[in-house]
Length: 419
Ligand code: NIG
Ligand code: FE
Image (tube, rainbow, N blue to C red):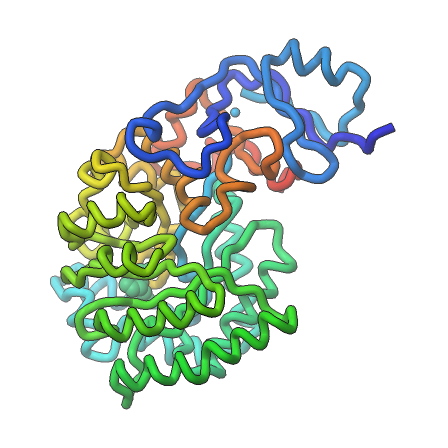
């Protein structure tokens, strides 16, 4: 007898299929057309992957002989967070006070606060301390429905310190139930006493070869390379050199661009074949056109534009031009948000996305931004059995409601196991 299916989700009042046709992303009009099935059941096999999904009576007949490890009678999607900085030590609540009083992000950064403040505290923290806080943060994200999350380094800057952060992420990848896409972000700020050019040289000649060696030995798995491409941080040329070198060693390019100043980062992303560019508040028209043509995903971060009172990224124009739009929480000491439901809510209200567009952006397109949409981001046979069950009459409550998500989200399921 075949091994026992792990989970039966019975009689879901509504199941939202972000895609049922094997797409790797949803762009343009497709991002508005989710299939909402009424009265369905879903089976996750012993391997943690979805075995069947369909009308409750059909599934009941098909699996009439089967006994399940677990059955959930529900009324019930998995969320993917495409951009976070979750490994750090030291509070920055005092900077929130400064921002409320009118200071800009760059005022604080140039006065030695911001990323540099967190770098100092993170360097002082032990690996164990960093792991414990990461574990707690990922737990909060899971409870808010995120089952796959991108995790960046970038508060170490020096090679030894970046490796410490990356080991913490690797340990989380191996030990914790949430799926992780690991990003090396050593070019998050220019270390004190160095120029951007010198920092880029150090990354290319010393950091990347070390990461390659660790990858080859199976000690560490890194998926993406990131650079903070911004005026006063890494300029376009240094960004290009770092990203190109990362790509040559097999990393996916996924970087911060066009956030506070127009940098032509979107154009660079398209030129380099980047998987994704994040932020894009200041993206040019030509950058949007280039991203659409290159299939380069725009990872929009509504929490950051909200917190820093920036102009909103032009989500509508990107969607209308066929850019693949994804969402991320950008969880970091500046934008302290664990919740993708909150991110979707902000995307709808402030960036004028529709609820289906926001859901596609926080599921299949976010998985695409991480190169994982063949296994994650939608309820389809053969994909990993990750989803959430909510206690509401309609799926839209996940976005409509702001706050109180712990009561709304009844179950978070990863690989068919209730977390
Ligand atoms: O995406 N913009 C660069 N990085 C982060 C902020 C990191 C920090 O302020 O600590 C972001 O918003
Ligand atoms: Fe970020």
